[in-house]
Amino acid sequence: MGIILDKAPMIARPIPGGQVLLTTADYFIDLGRKYSVWPLTFGLACCAIEMMVAYAGRFDFDRLGVIPRPSPRQADLLLIAGTVTKKMAGPIQEIYHQMPEPRFVISMGSCANCGGPYFDSYSVVKGVDRIIPVDVYIPGCPPRPEALIYGVLELQKKITRMKLAKGGGATHQQEKGSRDLAGSNA
Amino acid sequence: MKTPATREAAAAALLERCSDARLAEPGVKNYLTVRLASPKDLLAAARLLKGELGFGYLEMITAVDWLGPMKLEGLVSSRNPNPFTDKLPGPPVPPAAGAGAPYRPVLDLLWSFGNLRDGVKVFLRLEVPRDHPEVPSLAGEFAAADWQEREVYDLLGVRFAGHPNLTKILTPDFINGHPLRKDYAHEKDSYDGD
Image (cartoon, rainbow over all chains, first blue to last red; front, side, top):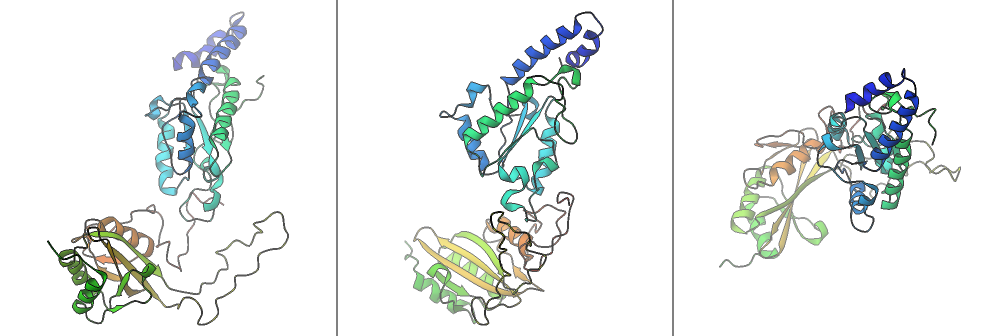
């Protein structure tokens, strides 16, 4: 499927009406992706408690199609919920590279965003964006489940702007900076 | 049935068995606290506690670095942490002589033993010099001592003689030195950036 999606723009663009076909395909693919953002079951510190609450009955992440997966091979979203220590930085990079494209990263809480209260520490990475690219940052210490849900809604907005033509089965993640979503309506 | 262990019985047995040991007053949180005189007494005291007095549970091992007072230049950021005021926090006030902690170049080790049957707790304290901190390992007596001693070694650099695998347990391999020592100087690594 990934190969078909990667080659689709190349095949569709030259034929008459191909652009319409691509735009329609983008719409349906993004719609599917948007409502099935499957995160990896992965918690690092106290933000993971808020993440668990968001999965549970009161906030019910299921209604947004957010269902935790036990393996990075099955996951679309890496939720960095907690403090990223230097010792954990290597495993996080490994998990990230085990995930199939298109993959998304949400940085949850002050520690994952910038080091937070551990900024001067000898053992904490000052922001997870120093080791992997991040799509959405959620401030808070820790953010409430509502904030996490809002973060996922923002990620869904980003997903609707992704295009097959930008490669990687959709707009792929750049080595540095955010996704190139320029020129997208929505 | 053994007679229940009491605070007084444990104190008497420890003081009798270990030469030059004395009761530390006040103890840790007012529990029975015995300060040992030399590392040689430690194994005997631990065996006595475990074998005869029924303190089978090693709750924790930790240590304090009493070096001081530290120069804080370069360690504390000089930026104003509060954007809503122009007033910078003043320079740190050095403690008055004689007040507070008596600074000395030692590592003060602390062991906590529990007797779960009788609900008694005993603390052992032992001072070792900072430049040559070596104490016998309790890993042979208490399995719990294995990781606890590795943690104290990792963060404070105390060498536990006879430990089966005395390696870093918490900090990553590329961190040099022992971070909880007062004179620890952090070397920048690849995760620190600018």
